[in-house]
Image (cartoon, rainbow, N blue to C red):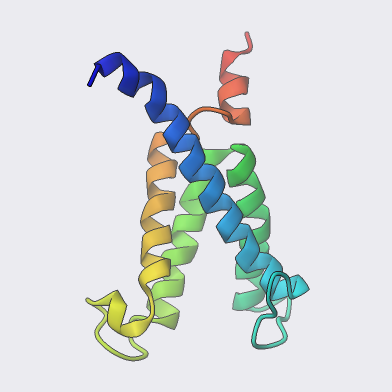
Length: 135
């Protein structure tokens, strides 16, 4: 394969990963607060850890989708997912070294996907990219 093809398509693939990840993350927040697309199993209080997580998922998901303040937003969301893993999964059942045994696979995966965006940025099709191009 041609190196030029990779340099052309890699930022676009990165953008697709960012948009889909942000959308999936947003849906977790809307489930907590609006019961959409499915209801969260308990009532969420705004001033609680789950309430804070819901706000981060809604606001952070939107910012990730549009690619605005991606480095900072992704860093915060990566931290949220690390906290979610260690508070909600690591020591509940199974082994903390094996997320597949304690239901924490998604939290670990999102933690590292967001860590990637914190380091690499939004890629193509983002407000961050448009802001860099303006003089």
